[in-house]
Amino acid sequence: MDDGYRESVANWREVLDGLDQRGLKQGPKLAVGAGVVGFRTALGKPYQDTAQQRCWLHKTPHVIKVLPNSVLPKVKADLHEI
Image 1 (cartoon, rainbow, N blue to C red):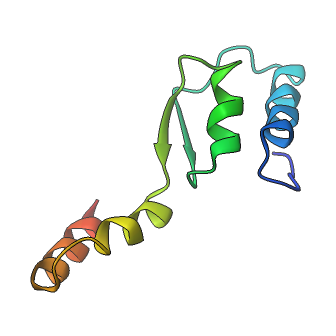
Image 2 (image 1 turned 30 degrees about the horizontal axis):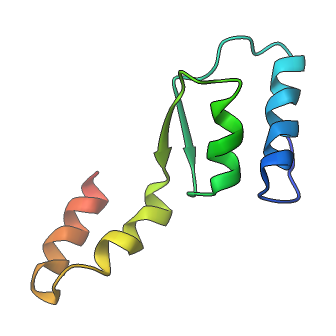
């Protein structure tokens, strides 16, 4: 684990380089992030085979805001089940 101070590509490269220096030679199968472009961009260089997924906590409000009110209770319940 490593602290970051910004969401930039350069900051995320430092974090990922640190993982490499500490022995992570094979990338993770899945990386979950808040949708920050810096993270996704930096991840693509050393770990090209790593699948990326947006965090559900950050994704859910974007899904809900485009739905009609009539389906919100059912959709919210389904999302909580996921």
